[in-house]
Image 1 (cartoon, rainbow, N blue to C red):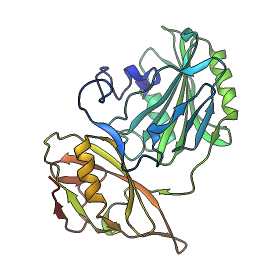
Image 2 (image 1 turned 180 degrees about the vertical axis):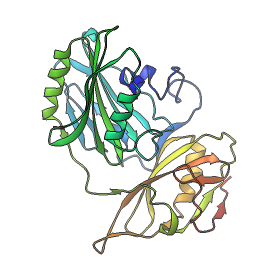
Image 3 (image 1 turned 30 degrees about the horizontal axis):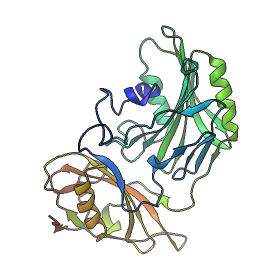
Length: 308
């Protein structure tokens, strides 16, 4: 994600600066949810004093004079988010990019250590590592840190990455002055990060014998886009919430109608049922869902569900 460590305008999710959603052009894939009150990763907000994200239970106090000037783009179909871009009044001092990558849909890494190691191994040739990937503790939480510099531009970057709810959450500090970065990192001690007790995040839960009944959504729009979906299964095995990371509105409606008819084995831990948050990808093959990029041969036979 080295190219993502600069600005969302030139991020890995949108390398050509092309439109990613309806905010920038006509009809396009966008994020949405089955209800407007349940927190989602892209729902964080920055005020004059802090950035807060209910989904990640994250509150980051902003340094004096630093604020969010622009909202980021919509999530990518790989589950990459620009949560916030924070800059000082004098933009020459640097910036802070707060990003998240859904581990369910990442093409390169599934945890903080893998992400930082991948970034370090794929830096541009003109960048030099100042501090190799190192585990550190900030605000009582474990992060993986990477520092590197571009001698040509004299830009120093520090990446601090942690894991929350099967996402890697990344803070990227950029400045020509290492003292600015050090000051901002010192300020992270006042940050609060807390994992929500429920739901439990379990990859590939919607597979095999966990699925008792399913209805395949029939997508007839012929857009052939990838549709990454996260959803929450309640303690009785029913889908209670659906989050579309990237989809068209009609696709979201059809898939939601189908998922609400799926039934799962309740997830038991110590004899107690827990809610589960999991994910899967629809749309990569016509009329057929994918599980983690591959057809799941263990699912029970599907019944067609055509809402068109």
